[in-house]
Length: 569
Image 1 (cartoon, helix red, strand yellow):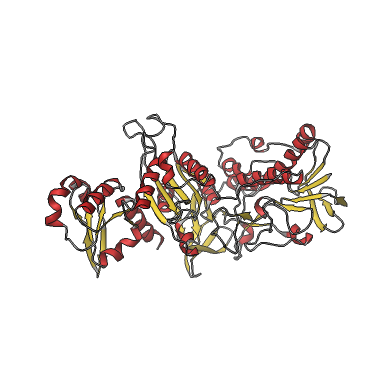
Image 2 (cartoon, rainbow, N blue to C red):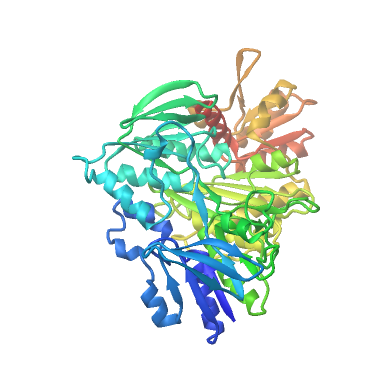
């Protein structure tokens, strides 16, 4: 069997090496238009920032090493220009010699990746992108000022997603003044605003000029014009260099040449085994749509575009198995993580914004535990959010922000999602514990306890963005923290133009003071700092006959949510 793979990075090279491990007699050809194959593209921002000092460390394999170890015919600087899926033949242009030749195949694997999205604005041709090693070389040269007499001092980064934030951090590391421009009303779209605001805070604390609900409307050789979301010019900033990190769109050109059907979200439509609509043609990686593990039952378009390296590598392995008669791959939940100046943000599955847009019922849970035992030195807080299907108790999504322990918790939650574990079932996970690593009640277990209390009805909660309506409709808001905590800051709403603060009845005095200070008959919302004391207060008042809800995530979640509204407005 002759298998031709177009694209030699994550998915393509994973497919090629897996094929060789399983089929020594197969003829395997890899065609790559760029100069390199099997390179660490996720490391490119860190090479530009000097964290990775050795450029060669990014080059995991070469055509020569792949030929020696795997007997692969790897051809760099060769571009496929035509696909004849009936004749099972490709037309290939050798970029080095200028020659054109035909290449036959029995099975064709398309792994072209994605093309960087670049806004169409005047002067955008000078913007750099960061997709491959050559792009990283250009960025490093621009930072160093190679060829124009001096190093760059200012930069504008367009796009506040994962790659954009990595670029920002590394440009700051290189000593540049950076303006980050994001069209959405927050950075890091996979997070909900009350968690994303913490990432924004970290960027601002390190000197980044963060502009959300904004766009670059024009570039000159040294400046960037910034407009609001409606396109109205609001500012002009210095920009010795500009990086477009808006994202990628699937490269579907070859699939279209082959006659393959494209999916509803712009990628190549594939089945669960990565077959396109054309016989003997497969599509993998960023170019292909993914089966969405969280699609609602009966959803007409259960697909997602998830341009992540982990998933691309899984695609490569899986397509090799399928070609050789094996099957089996889980749909994706889209787990991702990013570091921002020592802060870590991660997510898996749906966020609340998307669930609302889909009209799906959900239950939100916020907690603010320490990443390990509070009495052990170095404890730092986490902000965790879990989204749960109220009908099945299955986990729909998870988010986390903190300085330590974020990746561990998101990985556990993503694993629970893959295994179909319920949110309440998190309470019974047996997780590794020692004071330096976690708590006897791990933050993941605590999410399970909260989920179980909500599932059984032992506690009812209200979200930070629902509080205004409830208080406006007559609910009494009670802060059950200590007077000192209350004085430092409590929930304060504006009703009919006038401020309205929560009344302070500390938890330890609640039994004695409830009858005199909390009206009976109207709903009551209690809050503490992070939610746990609020749960205790809610249970107490419920048993005293009150109609009670606990403010989910407490004062901290309300504070972050309202700050996000102000910051991004």
